[in-house]
Image 1 (cartoon, rainbow, N blue to C red):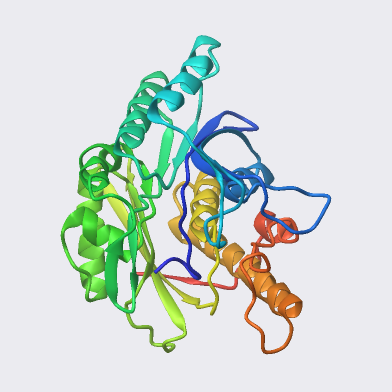
Image 2: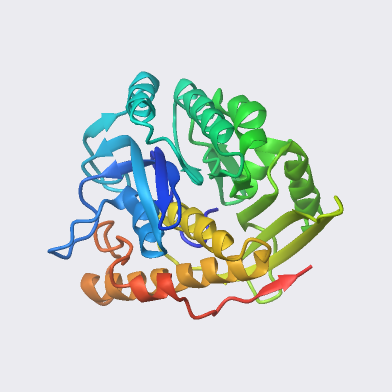
Length: 335
């Protein structure tokens, strides 16, 4: 299950620049997302919008260009091929514009496209050893306790063998964490062990964005867990582990995974050695965005009516203040 609300649809890569540097990302793009003029803001531009608001300059490479997201009954558009991705990157490289501090990637359905992303990130890391690669390994989710993949199965070995070892921060859900490690999560202890396994594969920061673990606060809460390894000057490693309990929202949203990854990137940049603070700000901002969205959607739908996909578009513009400076409403517990 995705944190909190459901989402996942074709994404691409984004290359982004900070005001004090540059960053990058791969993500999907749609022409229309927000119903309210005059702001026309791409839906799969969640990463772009959030990161710009938080002080990053974004170079976006869109893996798809869709009329709208796939939560609607119909959509039209184009899918970027691995060759076209290479061509775009080559243009950046020839103009010496491929200098980045961050790379953020999300959903893709093509193993060759994902392998091309890996090659590009490797080259960027050779140029900047301090580059941080944030990966949301979008592969599947759980519904009613049963997990299933919604991408081709040949992507799993690419993620396991090439992507995750290269990543610095990963944000899988429970099902994806289980796929990557081959271990099921039935308890908090299992989750901590799985995050240790993911650390051993490469990433220093692992956040399991949602799980079906029980909450002491009741079935209306979703559990997320995080783990961050920090190396001290003397070479020793300190691991910080946290747990968060988030109120579920009874609606199907699109873009929440992108929103989570973008804000986690930004807040870990601002709080590099404080996973608790970074996650509290990330999840609290999401809470404000989703509560505003569902309130507006229900008002538009009318009493007793189920909001439509259009009415459930995330209220990003209206939530600018909450993204920039979120009131902490979700506290993380240090384990």
